[in-house]
Each structure stands twice: as structure tokens, then as C-alpha cells.
Image (cartoon, rainbow, N blue to C red; front, side):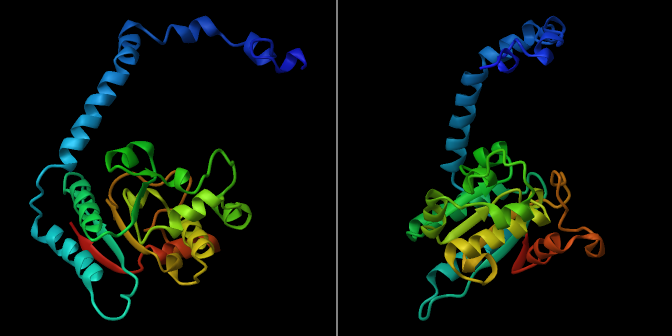
Length: 244
């Protein structure tokens, strides 16, 4: 191997001021690094206690739980697809509602998956990230290209074919392109041309919080959106909507 490709021997390494950047890590930051694992364990214990806490839903939360339960317990012919957007500001109880819906699905022996755009939001509700769910790791490609070129692995196919409900937290951080990709990929996996491959999709989020990164908001001016993003824009208004 050429020395130009060896870490520390490259020109970029030699010209980099390592000493200057090392000074950024003062004693306070070093102590925080040492306490990272203990703090993470405490957070985990806190999440477990929250999940096991008795939940007293508000009127709006109870209404959302009722919609999900009625869909699950509906008798006769196979119930139609459930698409539900639950919006609420920070502190409105979205996470508690997700835990309650998850318990409801477990009690009725329904399989589900919880995903979220970021690692922190996914961790807080016991889910996995959007990118992890679809095995999207450092592709460097936009969602429109991925929808055409991304090869879905057997693990991803099995993951989505084995669930009945998909719960998405921090929904408004996804963006139009990401939602269009989600829709097309689920249609391929589930071999169904209906929205999201006819999978039941429950979303939760706050439209007034952060905007999606390198994507278009669901409340963008549709006249300024490219064709692929428009697909996600229209999907963001599909189904029932409720306020937490």
C-alpha cells in the first residue's frame, strides 16, 4: 500500500494542526466522556420506568387509542388500512402515547416496528432509525436515486413483511423525499401498489419543531417542489389526522 494512503502519512494529516485541536478537549469534557456510559445506563433505566408507568390518557389521546383499538378488534372482513397522523407539541405526551399503542398491539398479538429519523428520537421510544430500518448507510445518494437503485436486503424484506403496524416518531423530520422513498420501498417489499404497501402506518410529530435536513418540509409550497418530492408531500396528508 502506498504511504499516501496510510493514516498519519498523508499530506492532509501532516498539515493538520493536531495540537491545536487536542486543546479543545479540556478536563471538563474528558470527565463527561468518562461518565458517558453511567449516564446512558441511568437514561435507560428512566426509559424503562416510563414505559412501565400507568398511563392516564387525555381526551385526545384516548380518542387516538380508541381509533387503533377499534381497527384491531374490528370483526368480519379484514379491516382496511389504517393511516393516522397524530400531531402535538413538545410535552403533549407523544412518547407516552406511542408506548401505550405498543402495549395495545402487544396485548392483541399484533406485530409492529417503531422508527424515527434520529438516533436519539428512536432510542427514546424503543425503536430504530429510519436509515437502519432500510439499511441505508453512507450511500451518498439522494432518496429519488435510492428508490430506483437501492437493493433491499433479505433482512429488510423480512423486517417489514413480518409486521402489521409501522409507528413513526418525529414524523415531520423525515421530509417529502424521505416519505416518497418510504412509500415506494414498502410497495416493492410488500408487493402492493397501495400507499405504503397497504401497511398500517401511525405517525407522531410536531410540525412546529425542526425542519428536515436536506429535504422539503411537508408544509412547503407545492409549486416549488420537484416531482419526486411532490409524491411525499401528498402522502403526508393521507389518512386520518388527530391532535394530541
